Image 1: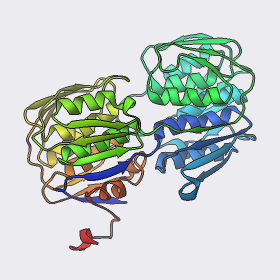
Image 2: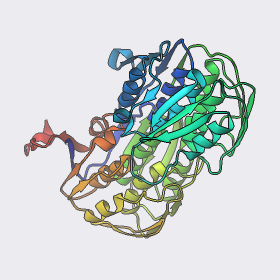
Image 3: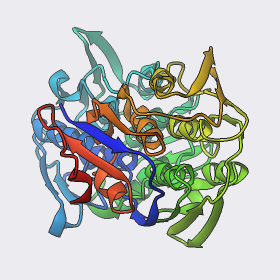
Image 4: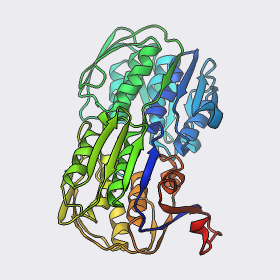
Length: 433
């Protein structure tokens, strides 16, 4: 099992490039189910969840070419022959995004059998909102032996109102609605850039969608979709992570290939914390910190609020800020598992329900710590980059699910970070190779 070894103390200086958003790529790959024609997606990140999605589609009979390097992070998917519309447990057990194939499979094939999804254990992300919407659209849902099964001769349009905002629920039912008969109105929809990215692909495939990116989406179903080529959005969470990395290490970092418009809440909080942020162009942001950081409270909200996927990284920053930072987690009820590990490194954080209190200006020191989920992993790397000594971070497979070769990217701007296996111990001079 791979680990990271991180030696703290280096400011990050230079330019670091953001990869495509895996949370956009996954639903867009699922959308290929909706047509017999080829769908080509560009700017696909090289992360574990993408490989899981490739295996999932291939297990159903799809042909999936997934290439990097010369292929420029591109995938071409052909779902002409979907011989087995089943999302098998052994493939989807590590990835909650597997539920995104439910809507398109029912819409295209009239049947879907999907294992109850897995993924990071950060709290309840119930699939019941997906199921309630599909039932309103005419699907018959059954559950047994750990699988959900949905059947419908053809879905029909419906008026759907989400009880709570859900990104995957919005995406799943949007994909179902584009092939449903008649019109579908969806209210209280997620507004995240990942939803608008999926909608852009579906429109390129011939779908009739209005209002994506707003709380209300209107869909006029069509009988058939065609193939398309689409470029995936940059990963706003990876970009936000790098902005925090520049600030926490007192660096001077340019984050390139990002979309500053998607980073508004993160940029505002970093500025309140004392970092200098300059938007250099439509796809690059510069972060500088050459003085003490200061406490600034956050409260996670659905987009365009402060993203829950940036809460752990911001908490690492708060350990270095002067004063007390209150961190309120409103999206997931179990997203403070990184607190114990940060405290092992010398942080002073207490948790009361959904609120964490971070007493800053902590002198962090090296420790052996363990990743519990994807974003917690990033917070530990950020903390380790400002800690005394060498920190060993275990279970980095969580990070590999959503960050493409992060250790190589960070090393390229000055971080002392290396990947190692269980049997490998870095030499004393390994950092200077």
